[in-house]
Amino acid sequence: MKILSLSLLFLLAATVSQAQRRLHVPKLIELLTSTNIIENEAELLEKQQLAINYHNCRSWHLGVETSNIINFQTVPANCKDYVEDYLTSEQYRADSKTVCKEAYFYAKGLALKNDTVNVWIFDLDETLLSNVPFYAQYGYGTEKQDPNAFNKWLETGESPVLPESLHLYQNIQELGIEPILLTERYQELEEVTLKNLEAAGFTYWRQVLFKPTGSNTKISNFKSKERKKLVRSGHTIIGNIGDQWADLAKDSPGRRTFKLPNPLYYKN
Image (cartoon, helix red, strand yellow):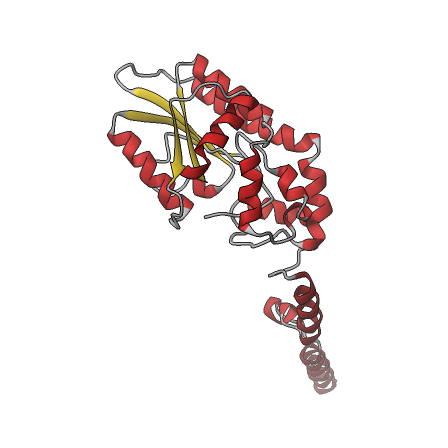
Protein backbone atom coordinates (compact mmCIF):
# COMPACT_ATOMS: atom_id res chain seq x y z
CA MET A 1 0.00 0.00 0.00
CA LYS A 2 2.87 2.37 0.87
CA ILE A 3 4.57 1.55 -2.41
CA LEU A 4 1.35 2.38 -4.28
CA SER A 5 0.94 5.69 -2.40
CA LEU A 6 4.51 6.70 -3.19
CA SER A 7 3.99 5.83 -6.83
CA LEU A 8 0.91 8.01 -6.98
CA LEU A 9 2.79 10.90 -5.37
CA PHE A 10 5.65 10.63 -7.88
CA LEU A 11 3.15 10.48 -10.73
CA LEU A 12 1.33 13.59 -9.45
CA ALA A 13 4.60 15.50 -9.03
CA ALA A 14 5.68 14.61 -12.54
CA THR A 15 2.36 15.73 -13.95
CA VAL A 16 2.56 19.11 -12.15
CA SER A 17 6.16 19.56 -13.29
CA GLN A 18 5.24 18.90 -16.93
CA ALA A 19 2.30 21.30 -16.70
CA GLN A 20 4.57 24.03 -15.32
CA ARG A 21 7.02 23.50 -18.14
CA ARG A 22 4.23 23.81 -20.70
CA LEU A 23 2.88 27.03 -19.08
CA HIS A 24 5.21 29.73 -20.40
CA VAL A 25 4.85 33.10 -18.72
CA PRO A 26 6.52 35.75 -20.90
CA LYS A 27 8.93 38.11 -19.19
CA LEU A 28 8.58 41.89 -19.51
CA ILE A 29 11.16 42.14 -22.28
CA GLU A 30 9.45 39.33 -24.18
CA LEU A 31 6.13 41.13 -23.89
CA LEU A 32 7.62 44.35 -25.25
CA THR A 33 9.51 42.69 -28.08
CA SER A 34 6.80 40.43 -29.38
CA THR A 35 7.11 40.19 -33.17
CA ASN A 36 3.51 41.18 -33.73
CA ILE A 37 3.75 44.18 -31.40
CA ILE A 38 6.93 45.40 -33.08
CA GLU A 39 5.46 45.13 -36.57
CA ASN A 40 2.22 46.85 -35.62
CA GLU A 41 3.91 49.58 -33.57
CA ALA A 42 6.57 50.20 -36.21
CA GLU A 43 3.91 50.77 -38.84
CA LEU A 44 1.96 53.07 -36.52
CA LEU A 45 4.99 55.04 -35.44
CA GLU A 46 6.20 55.48 -39.00
CA LYS A 47 2.87 57.06 -39.90
CA GLN A 48 2.84 59.29 -36.84
CA GLN A 49 6.59 60.04 -36.85
CA LEU A 50 6.83 59.29 -33.15
CA ALA A 51 9.47 57.62 -31.04
CA ILE A 52 6.87 55.84 -28.96
CA ASN A 53 3.12 55.74 -28.51
CA TYR A 54 1.58 56.23 -25.06
CA HIS A 55 -1.91 54.93 -24.47
CA ASN A 56 -2.40 56.80 -21.19
CA CYS A 57 -1.68 60.45 -21.86
CA ARG A 58 -2.08 61.52 -18.25
CA SER A 59 0.64 59.07 -17.27
CA TRP A 60 2.80 60.35 -20.13
CA HIS A 61 2.31 63.90 -18.84
CA LEU A 62 3.36 62.84 -15.35
CA GLY A 63 6.50 61.30 -16.82
CA VAL A 64 7.31 64.57 -18.58
CA GLU A 65 6.81 66.78 -15.53
CA THR A 66 8.93 64.51 -13.33
CA SER A 67 11.72 64.37 -15.94
CA ASN A 68 11.34 60.63 -16.41
CA ILE A 69 10.39 61.15 -20.05
CA ILE A 70 13.02 63.30 -21.76
CA ASN A 71 14.34 64.22 -25.20
CA PHE A 72 10.97 63.82 -26.93
CA GLN A 73 10.69 65.59 -30.27
CA THR A 74 6.91 65.89 -30.33
CA VAL A 75 3.93 65.17 -28.15
CA PRO A 76 2.55 61.68 -28.95
CA ALA A 77 -0.06 62.10 -31.68
CA ASN A 78 -2.70 60.28 -29.68
CA CYS A 79 -2.23 62.82 -26.84
CA LYS A 80 -3.19 65.88 -28.89
CA ASP A 81 -6.68 66.12 -27.41
CA TYR A 82 -5.36 65.57 -23.90
CA VAL A 83 -2.75 68.35 -24.18
CA GLU A 84 -5.26 70.72 -25.76
CA ASP A 85 -7.82 70.03 -23.06
CA TYR A 86 -5.23 70.48 -20.33
CA LEU A 87 -3.75 73.73 -21.60
CA THR A 88 -7.15 75.30 -22.25
CA SER A 89 -8.69 74.15 -18.97
CA GLU A 90 -8.79 75.48 -15.43
CA GLN A 91 -6.53 72.60 -14.40
CA TYR A 92 -3.51 74.18 -16.08
CA ARG A 93 -4.10 77.44 -14.23
CA ALA A 94 -4.74 75.59 -10.98
CA ASP A 95 -1.48 73.65 -11.30
CA SER A 96 0.43 76.83 -12.09
CA LYS A 97 -1.23 78.64 -9.20
CA THR A 98 -0.21 75.89 -6.80
CA VAL A 99 3.43 76.18 -7.85
CA CYS A 100 3.41 79.97 -7.64
CA LYS A 101 1.69 80.00 -4.25
CA GLU A 102 4.30 77.65 -2.82
CA ALA A 103 7.03 79.86 -4.25
CA TYR A 104 5.50 82.92 -2.63
CA PHE A 105 4.98 81.25 0.76
CA TYR A 106 8.60 80.11 0.68
CA ALA A 107 9.86 83.62 -0.12
CA LYS A 108 7.60 85.26 2.45
CA GLY A 109 9.03 83.08 5.20
CA LEU A 110 12.63 84.12 4.57
CA ALA A 111 14.66 86.61 6.57
CA LEU A 112 16.42 88.44 3.76
CA LYS A 113 19.91 89.82 4.27
CA ASN A 114 20.63 93.47 3.59
CA ASP A 115 24.27 93.04 2.54
CA THR A 116 23.41 91.47 -0.81
CA VAL A 117 21.10 91.92 -3.80
CA ASN A 118 18.30 89.40 -3.34
CA VAL A 119 17.01 88.27 -6.73
CA TRP A 120 14.56 85.79 -8.20
CA ILE A 121 15.26 84.19 -11.58
CA PHE A 122 12.32 83.93 -13.97
CA ASP A 123 12.35 82.02 -17.23
CA LEU A 124 10.27 83.68 -19.94
CA ASP A 125 8.47 81.37 -22.40
CA GLU A 126 5.80 79.20 -20.78
CA THR A 127 6.76 80.84 -17.48
CA LEU A 128 5.80 84.51 -17.84
CA LEU A 129 4.48 84.49 -21.41
CA SER A 130 2.54 81.75 -23.18
CA ASN A 131 3.14 80.43 -26.67
CA VAL A 132 0.11 78.14 -26.67
CA PRO A 133 -1.53 80.11 -29.54
CA PHE A 134 1.47 79.23 -31.71
CA TYR A 135 1.60 75.55 -30.76
CA ALA A 136 -2.15 75.23 -31.29
CA GLN A 137 -1.42 75.69 -35.00
CA TYR A 138 0.85 72.63 -34.86
CA GLY A 139 -1.39 70.13 -33.15
CA TYR A 140 -0.50 71.25 -29.63
CA GLY A 141 3.03 69.96 -29.95
CA THR A 142 2.22 66.81 -31.93
CA GLU A 143 3.58 68.25 -35.19
CA LYS A 144 7.09 69.39 -35.94
CA GLN A 145 7.50 72.99 -37.05
CA ASP A 146 10.17 75.04 -38.73
CA PRO A 147 12.18 76.98 -36.10
CA ASN A 148 11.82 80.05 -38.30
CA ALA A 149 8.07 79.84 -37.85
CA PHE A 150 8.46 80.10 -34.08
CA ASN A 151 10.80 83.07 -34.40
CA LYS A 152 8.24 84.81 -36.63
CA TRP A 153 5.63 84.21 -33.93
CA LEU A 154 7.91 85.76 -31.30
CA GLU A 155 8.52 88.74 -33.56
CA THR A 156 4.81 89.55 -33.44
CA GLY A 157 5.14 90.30 -29.73
CA GLU A 158 1.71 88.82 -29.07
CA SER A 159 2.51 86.15 -26.50
CA PRO A 160 -0.20 86.39 -23.81
CA VAL A 161 0.52 86.63 -20.10
CA LEU A 162 0.44 83.69 -17.72
CA PRO A 163 -1.53 85.36 -14.89
CA GLU A 164 -0.43 83.15 -12.01
CA SER A 165 3.22 83.88 -12.77
CA LEU A 166 2.48 87.60 -13.03
CA HIS A 167 1.03 87.53 -9.51
CA LEU A 168 4.17 85.84 -8.19
CA TYR A 169 6.32 88.31 -10.10
CA GLN A 170 4.56 91.24 -8.46
CA ASN A 171 4.40 89.68 -4.99
CA ILE A 172 8.10 88.88 -4.67
CA GLN A 173 8.92 92.54 -5.42
CA GLU A 174 6.76 93.56 -2.46
CA LEU A 175 8.98 91.31 -0.34
CA GLY A 176 12.08 93.16 -1.47
CA ILE A 177 13.25 90.60 -4.04
CA GLU A 178 14.37 91.85 -7.46
CA PRO A 179 13.21 89.94 -10.58
CA ILE A 180 15.80 88.91 -13.17
CA LEU A 181 14.60 87.38 -16.44
CA LEU A 182 16.86 84.72 -17.94
CA THR A 183 15.67 83.54 -21.34
CA GLU A 184 16.91 81.37 -24.18
CA ARG A 185 15.45 83.86 -26.65
CA TYR A 186 18.15 85.37 -28.84
CA GLN A 187 19.41 88.90 -28.22
CA GLU A 188 18.04 90.00 -31.59
CA LEU A 189 14.54 89.66 -30.13
CA GLU A 190 15.23 91.99 -27.20
CA GLU A 191 13.22 94.99 -28.36
CA VAL A 192 10.05 93.13 -29.29
CA THR A 193 10.31 90.93 -26.21
CA LEU A 194 10.56 93.86 -23.80
CA LYS A 195 7.53 95.50 -25.43
CA ASN A 196 5.62 92.23 -25.16
CA LEU A 197 6.51 91.95 -21.47
CA GLU A 198 5.40 95.50 -20.73
CA ALA A 199 2.12 94.99 -22.57
CA ALA A 200 1.52 91.83 -20.55
CA GLY A 201 1.97 93.67 -17.24
CA PHE A 202 5.64 93.14 -16.44
CA THR A 203 6.65 96.76 -15.97
CA TYR A 204 9.86 96.38 -13.95
CA TRP A 205 12.89 94.09 -13.91
CA ARG A 206 16.43 94.38 -12.67
CA GLN A 207 17.86 92.67 -15.74
CA VAL A 208 16.73 90.70 -18.75
CA LEU A 209 19.43 88.31 -19.96
CA PHE A 210 19.17 87.00 -23.52
CA LYS A 211 21.09 84.27 -25.27
CA PRO A 212 23.66 85.56 -27.79
CA THR A 213 22.15 85.48 -31.27
CA GLY A 214 23.18 82.33 -33.13
CA SER A 215 24.57 80.58 -30.06
CA ASN A 216 24.15 76.79 -30.02
CA THR A 217 24.94 76.46 -26.32
CA LYS A 218 22.54 74.19 -24.46
CA ILE A 219 19.98 76.04 -22.39
CA SER A 220 21.13 74.43 -19.14
CA ASN A 221 24.76 75.44 -19.79
CA PHE A 222 23.88 78.98 -20.84
CA LYS A 223 21.64 79.64 -17.86
CA SER A 224 24.02 78.05 -15.40
CA LYS A 225 26.84 80.28 -16.64
CA GLU A 226 24.72 83.42 -16.36
CA ARG A 227 23.59 82.54 -12.84
CA LYS A 228 27.19 82.00 -11.74
CA LYS A 229 28.04 85.47 -13.04
CA LEU A 230 25.22 86.93 -10.95
CA VAL A 231 26.38 85.18 -7.80
CA ARG A 232 29.98 86.31 -8.35
CA SER A 233 28.82 89.88 -8.76
CA GLY A 234 27.13 89.93 -5.35
CA HIS A 235 23.63 88.65 -6.07
CA THR A 236 21.88 86.07 -3.91
CA ILE A 237 19.48 83.91 -5.94
CA ILE A 238 16.59 83.43 -3.55
CA GLY A 239 14.49 81.44 -6.00
CA ASN A 240 14.33 80.23 -9.57
CA ILE A 241 11.23 79.29 -11.57
CA GLY A 242 10.81 77.85 -15.05
CA ASP A 243 8.85 75.36 -17.13
CA GLN A 244 11.85 73.24 -18.18
CA TRP A 245 14.21 71.31 -15.95
CA ALA A 246 17.00 72.88 -18.01
CA ASP A 247 15.99 76.23 -16.47
CA LEU A 248 16.79 74.89 -13.03
CA ALA A 249 19.73 72.56 -13.62
CA LYS A 250 23.48 72.66 -12.98
CA ASP A 251 25.42 75.35 -11.09
CA SER A 252 23.95 78.15 -8.97
CA PRO A 253 20.29 77.20 -9.44
CA GLY A 254 19.23 79.25 -6.42
CA ARG A 255 18.25 78.46 -2.86
CA ARG A 256 15.09 76.81 -4.11
CA THR A 257 13.70 76.00 -7.54
CA PHE A 258 10.12 75.70 -8.79
CA LYS A 259 8.95 73.80 -11.88
CA LEU A 260 5.86 74.99 -13.76
CA PRO A 261 3.86 72.54 -15.90
CA ASN A 262 4.52 72.27 -19.63
CA PRO A 263 3.60 69.18 -21.68
CA LEU A 264 4.21 70.93 -25.04
CA TYR A 265 7.92 70.38 -25.56
CA TYR A 266 11.25 69.36 -24.04
CA LYS A 267 14.43 71.45 -24.07
CA ASN A 268 17.84 70.86 -22.58
